[in-house]
Image 1 (cartoon, rainbow, N blue to C red):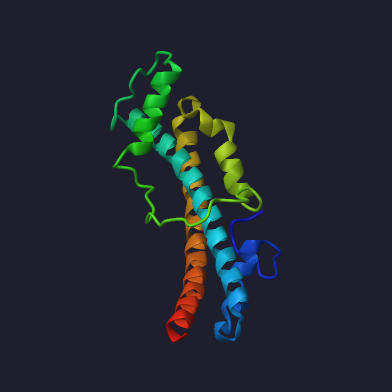
Image 2 (tube, rainbow, N blue to C red; image 1 turned 90 degrees about the vertical axis):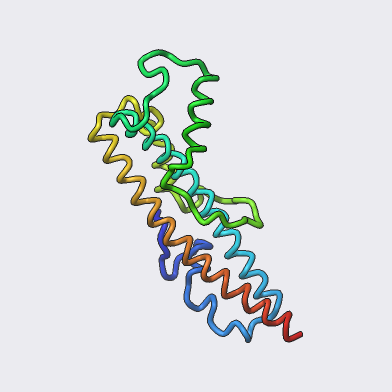
Length: 181
């Protein structure tokens, strides 16, 4: 499965990104237009959530890389840490203002729904046991894993921006109708 649009595909993503989805919006009934906008919003929420999962994993891997390079010391490195210490370290990593994986912070009006349905590549990458224990990875394997996840995140972000553009066109048409009456 792929994160990308497939012409003629049956997934919601394929319908939302089909160029015909936003053709002749003025000829659509209000209910159809709202349903299309709602589908685009749901797709954007699902993509956003999946992207954040990838970003969280990247944050953890980047923190490990930074510890190894000496950019940031690894608290308690080499000693077993309690669950509370691990949770505190994770909280610091994910709250770090120097993170490079920040989005534009859009407000989501819907909750993620079928995140795993057609985002198997991202789901598998996040679930990969090797990325759950970055300290166990060699330097080259850590760098390869970071590069691999960055590639997935980049493609996912591109797809998400396209869905946002579709959602914007649909919302704009609904707004135009409200102004005109």
